[in-house]
Amino acid sequence: MSRRSGILEFAVLGLLRESPMHGYELRKRLNTSLGVFRAFSYGTLYPCLKTLVANGWLIEEPGHTSEDALAAPLTGRRAKIVYRLTAEGKEHFEELLSQTGPDAYEDETFAARFAFFGQTSRDVRMRVLEGRRSRLEERLEKMRASLVRTRERLDDYTLELQRHGMESVEREVRWLNELIESERAGRDLKGSDSGGPAQQNITSGSTGVLPRPGDTPGTDSPDDTAT
Image (tube, rainbow, N blue to C red):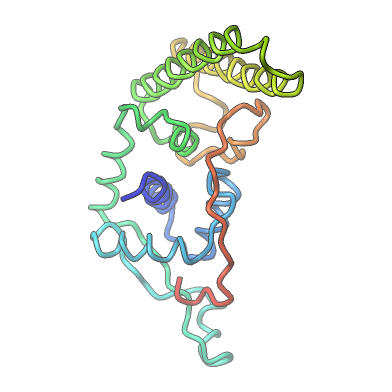
């Protein structure tokens, strides 16, 4: 499994822990709540859902809304499939949520993990935040050392680009310091006790400093009835 596929599976399980959803609603939530999935297609989501069903972590159910009930007789299309988290899926998600290794705070995964901090225990949140901060401090040290070695050979625009990158990392470190201080003081972020993921698009939030993993471009499916 690729790292990006693993992040998508984690996010889908986390969203379905809140409530069952059909594919269109899942895709919308992934786009709006989790900016790391800013652009991806049903061609990416559908195989992920099928894999989770095959693993026994999700089950498929027919939609039961009035709109779904009218869909078949009026359009000849079958109702949307609703995906529900199983007990095994919930247990698997909780196992993923408790992991605090390097994968939890890499650029590609940290944003998704942070979005579900409301469902994460405080000690796990602390380890992930501290791991992320440590990783960025190491990166910042290397960036500064590289700048000292190469600044005389760089033109003004390349030099400015490197400074901009350093400033972005420095801002995120300051943001992490504030979060860690709040966690140590026993303070939760506003809204975190709701049990759901952060509603703000955390990869483009007020701090403006979280990494933006590369999105996989895709084309929307013209027919979402399969999901």
